[in-house]
Image (tube, rainbow, N blue to C red; front, side, top):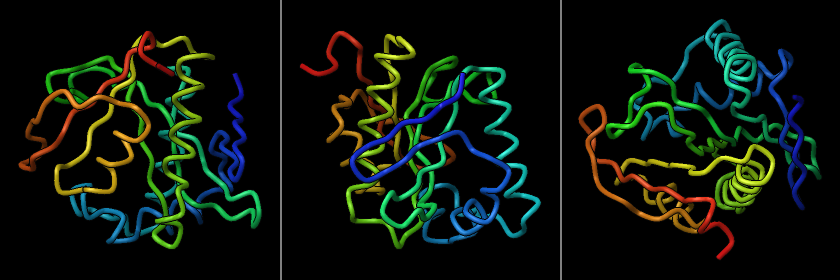
Length: 180
């Protein structure tokens, strides 16, 4: 399956090898990684590895994060999308084998509503095209922006938990509640 989603202002598609520069700009930024363990990447090989990980997700799990582009400029702005968290290595809040929604944008694109716009499109894709029953989300408690987005797109707060020594919030949305 090839992934391609268009919104009013964005294009979301499968990652391609040519997206390395964009991933490097995104994931080498310390501001981006403030609530992600403060471990930004430092070289292009790491950016290439991230893209290969996305390709592996598409192949093995039938879903993965999407490269996000601003329609007007054609600029890479980051990524948004769904991910199947599989196995003990990807356990989160006691859950394994679940679909989570996420988004990560280059700071110059923050505050424009792109994370919400892309996340709404990914929810729609997940429930209507992929036929998922439940989509989950999580964010560090201190990451106010990400928590607001998860709530704005309709995910319901479930509980607090600790992840890598940081307090975080857990959300979920069931297909039966989607669009109500």
